[in-house]
Length: 274
Ligand code: SF4
Image 1 (cartoon, rainbow, N blue to C red):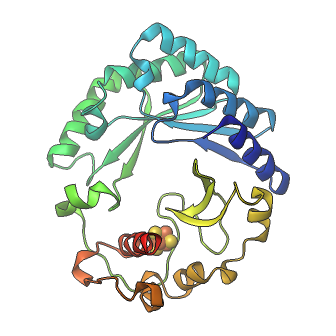
Image 2 (image 1 turned 180 degrees about the vertical axis):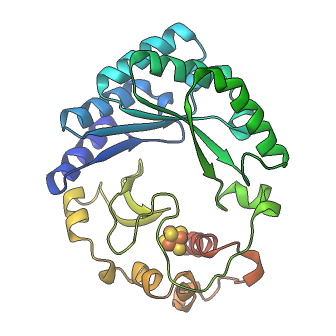
């Protein structure tokens, strides 16, 4: 995302709401550290009290440069960071990198540094992934950083690779809101803006595009009852989407879906392609 676009979205959002928090995440935001610093600075100038980032800590490869970066992030206004460490990240990023990044952030005075840990079942489980994650956390224990556990959701590649660990849930019933942020579709309290300008209130569930229309207008004009797809999700849930003529060719096999969100995303992916 361009800094100019991000700054514009921040100003637009702040003009119609009292922003309590702002977060940058990816992919990996620190692949573009200068952009991140510029965007955080803008959020700080707008007086947003909580400024967060999720990072995998790959920028901690070299201790000295990590310390310099952490100081700049702190000056830019960063107040909270979730550093991702678990068996999945460790396949690609040596644990030493997030360890250095987190230490540098603590040293720079960023107060809310946490480990962001994805578990398949729970940290006490015997499956190979959670066991490996437990081992990694043991190595990181001396740093005294708190851990935030997040249970892996059946989305993306997790559905293919971890299907044996997911318990199937009923597909019937209305949408209950984003399971991570708790954002409700009727009265969302946050939006995610993607690099292409899409303004989402759940995974890839857009309520407009900030490149085509002012974000302030998208936010203030939002009414779940006026968006046909969102209205169905609220009133009937994802199964209701199957009555749309555009989904006639969607092949629905009840056993295939782990829960309502899995079904919802599959149908919406189908709709986006058709
Ligand atoms: S994925 Fe669909 S069903 Fe799940 S919370 Fe989002 S909109 Fe609701």
